[in-house]
Length: 499
Image (cartoon, rainbow, N blue to C red; front, side, top):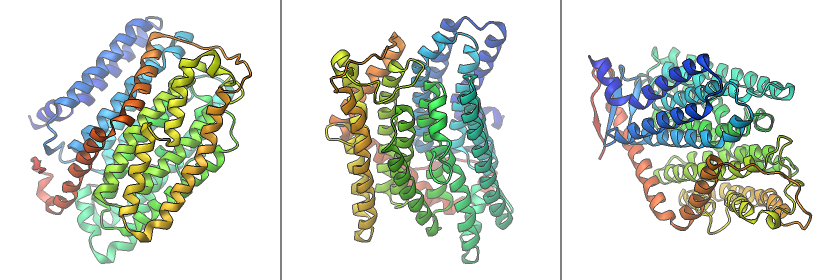
């Protein structure tokens, strides 16, 4: 009875996605041409799952399945972001689906499975649940990246797969160390074990391995080399999914591990800071000489992941709220940029050369693209400016000893201006663009909505910042009350009031 109650009360969003994936699997067996009907089913199931997330009680922190599954305001928020990103990906894939009407149901099914893995990942409360969810997300992403059966695409997918396997091995080695010192894979038991001073060094090593392996989902150091090739050779909608939804899931579990499980391991914050600095430096420097815009977006995503990790390394409520706000804006900015590229991509890729004259030939599309890339660059008025400003503010308030850290982040933001402006400047070149474009109602929905949100969230950023602060503050009491979660608590789950 408790098992059924947990499913009914806490896991309905995931169950809906699971049922939807099974339904799409059967549809794929029966037919591969009814893509219009499949689209309606997909949007309906995702919308219903999103509504179920809104219905969850987030005023309390609830456990399910023996404490291995967590429902809180923080985890539900990340699930909503994952579902919103998946819905946007479905609309963004309209061009690919119309041009390749075979295996439509399978393509949507893999997106469902990937989203399901991401949602379970951010709610996991033990390492078994976390690893199974991570592999569910990863394996479906591998298949999606190789959905175009071309030699170059398969080569990029193989690099993605091998890198992912190495990252998984690193995570498992770190988890094995944690299991050896605590005798359990549950977060509460491990947390109690690593509080001992004698366990500090081994806890720091295992935490570094686990966090480093999870950085594979963020495409940061040390597992970043797959991103440019995969983003370039995958279907554009898949590239958008990997750069947004996959990263949101990765950030969700990393934030929870750092703020809950490894809260007292100060060396991990230094490791996060080092990963952040090297990632943003490599992403921005490699982006300077890149002419292919899809590869440029890969380097951009590496750098932006570094910015978010930079504030997570501070370990304060302010830094967590700035990270949450940055993740929201990152999602909006990236879908605005990817939807513009989907309109322009004719199969040969989008380069800065092919963008020349776009502002004169197609001013509306050029305006949307300028809004997206100016926001990614962090220019005023656009939402990217406020997300970076809030990020810089969190570093300033952390103390004057971190001013060199702030200077390095500011320097990288200035470097990034060059390659973002390279794209914007190309559109205003007088040379006439010969780029063909693709328009559809579904693609226009993503393009218009994301562009409008980039502008409105920039102008009216205060409510979004306030909401981000609420999400961050809801996570901090979970850390404080983690001290009381021992032994029998997970055998008899009960809500924890968060006030």
